[in-house]
Every structure is written in structure tokens, then in C-alpha cells.
Image (cartoon, rainbow, N blue to C red; front, side, top):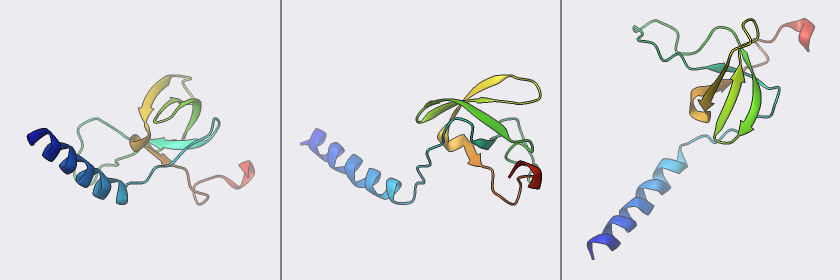
Length: 93
């Protein structure tokens, strides 16, 4: 009985969690901002100022390369934000 109640509650909470969750999928070569994990204050940026490029896809984790340094890091999809057209340079469009 207890196990059945736990499974029912998990299903119930998953339904409401998934209702408000975004599930973006990115492609190789897409430009994204990555989350900054260092300690921060109220007005500090939450995401990197420089866009990075996705190198490898294994949804929900992505390997992202920082262009100037060439360093690659693994990020979960919840730690990425897409670069919007407002940020992209006119020369690269």
C-alpha cells in the first residue's frame, strides 16, 4: 500500500513539474549562453556574457566550446540559454 501511494504521488508531482518545464533541444553549431556557477550577488549576471558553440549533443547534456579559448565543458540543458537575434551581430546573419 505504501509503495503504491509513493508511485501515485510521484506521478502526480511529475505531471505538474513537466507542465511548466521548458524542454529545448539544440543542434550542433547553435550558439548558447552558459550558466555561471560561481558565488554571485543580487545584481551579478546569471549567464555568461560571451556566447559559446555546441559541439556534441547527447540530450539532455551538451558539450559546449568557448570560442576564444577552445575549452570544452559539459552542461545540462537547464544550464543553457539560446542566443537571441537581438544579440547576434549583423555581419553573422
